Structure formats: C-alpha cells, structure tokens
Length: 312
Ligand code: NDP
Image (cartoon, rainbow, N blue to C red; front, side, top):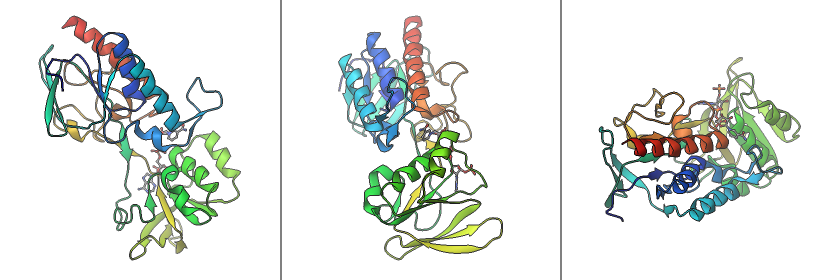
C-alpha cells in the first residue's frame, strides 16, 4: 500500500461511496475506495430499484452498483477489496489521519469520507441468530429461492418488509406479513401493490414471541397485541425486515454520534466532529435513507473535502 500521504480515502461502496469517488476523482483527489464487507452495499440485496432517476423501467440493485463501480473506475478511482479495521483521527486542521487495513498495514490521508452504510436490525429473540441460514433470513432475494412453493413470514411494516413480501409472493405459496402496529409504515405506492396480492396475508397488531424448531426453523408463535391470543404458524422461512442500524463501530468515541449511533454532521454539510473527516449516506442519515439521498450526500462529501484541502 502507498506510503504517500493521500488526499482522499473513502470507506464503503454503496451509492454514497461511489458518488464520492466519482466527484473526488474528477477533482484530481486520486481517491482510494475500500469496498468493505458488503461490496456495493445494501442495494446489492434488493430487487428492482424503481425510484432512482434516470432509469425509466427500473434497474436491479446489483446492476446499479456495478454501473457505479465502473463509473468510479473510469475516472481512475483505486478500488480495493479490503475492510478497514481501525482509524486514528487527527484533531488538527490539515492533520493526517491514519487508517488500518485488516489489522495489517496502515495508510495515511488528509481526508476521509465515511460511507459505511447501515445493517439490518435483529429482533433480539431466542434462536434468531442460531437459525440464520437455517430458515431465518434478512434478504429475500438471497434466500427466497429456498422457500419455493412454501409458506413464509416477513416481519415489519416498512418499505423493506413490503418489498421483501412482494418478492416472496412470486415464489412462495403464502406470505404472512407480521406488523406490530395497526397500520403500515411503508409508502402508499408499495401498500397499494401489496394489497392486490392474493397470497399475502397481513397480521396487524401482531408480534413474534417464539421461534419454533430444534435444529432449524419449523414455525413461529405469534401473539395479537390487542386480544392477547396466540397461534403457531408453520413456515419454512422467516424474513426479518425491521429497520437498520448504522455501521459506526469503527468510530465509537472518535466522532460525535447520536443516541442511535448515527454520525452527527454539521447541518447542510457532511462535516463530522473531526477536521478532514466527512460522512455520507445511511451512516449519517436516520431519516431519508434512500439510494438517491445517499448518492447526493456522497457528492457533497467529495465537494466538502475538496474545499477543506484547498483551505488547509
Ligand atoms: P423502517 O424503519 O422504515 O421500518 C421498520 C418497520 O419494522 C416498521 O414497521 C417498524 O414498526 C417495524 N419494527 C421495528 N422494530 C420491530 C420489532 N422489534 N418487531 C416488529 N416490528 C418492528 O425500516 P425499512 O428498512 O423498512 O426502511 C428504511 C428506510 O429505507 C425508509 O426510509 C424506507 O423508506 C427506505 N426504503 C425505501 C425503499 C424504496 O423506496 N423502494 C425500499 C426499502 C427501504 P413500527 O412502525 O411500529 O416502528
């Protein structure tokens, strides 16, 4: 790895990371982008992206991210298939930050753009982790195939849960959507789409209280929050889609984070609490969390870094 002090190291490879790379490269900042543990980010595990401008008939999440990578490479971004394991952030304006790669080598840079995204939340119940890959899943496009013609449950009432349910309804016999409130949080467009599907049954005011099975998932016990009745659903797959947590473990006690772990940025910018360190995408966005907003803040981070380097 280069011993030279870099201008721009980008951590993460979702829409925020790649947009930052495209802008930084075109500004001659010679960015290095680290792909991290999920190259392409969360869009690689979604189906069709229908709301990203410029694709009138939609595009698969995977395809979109492959295109972003090609575009970043076209402007000579150095893309490295490795994960960052530690960062040492300077407090000084114009200071040099040190980034450790897979506990082996260090790289130094005046600027860092954090675009590490977020990861799906766990329910926190018994057997949830033990049965991952044995019936419990966080990704319908990855695992839906294994439940062809069978019954499955999706937990959650947001856009992710409804997209998962929609995808699974094409493969599975029945999809049960478990929603803890009496209404869905998802966008109206997705709700209308789901209500039309004959094999999706929604259980409102319901929550999972037990995962059943000895060696793999065989069913779940659910309870109605209103009348307190419970029942067992025999299913082959349980898809958990209850939101996300930011990937900020690397930055605990190093950057200012909010109570949910999101990186705090200055209003209207991507500046974090350390000079020369910028954050873009879901890692700093508990509200919008869209591919397009991530790409937008990735662009902002590159422009913020360019101005910072010019001043210091
Ligand atoms: P959200 O936070 O929007 O929704 C999470 C859902 O899970 C809510 O219904 C919530 O219920 C429920 N939930 C949370 N914790 C539990 C629990 N312990 N047990 C049961 N249910 C629980 O997350 P999403 O991942 O759906 O979406 C995140 C963001 O990404 C949103 O902004 C969304 O719009 C966006 N997105 C957009 C897509 C698109 O436009 N195509 C596709 C996917 C996501 P409650 O309402 O009670 O809190």
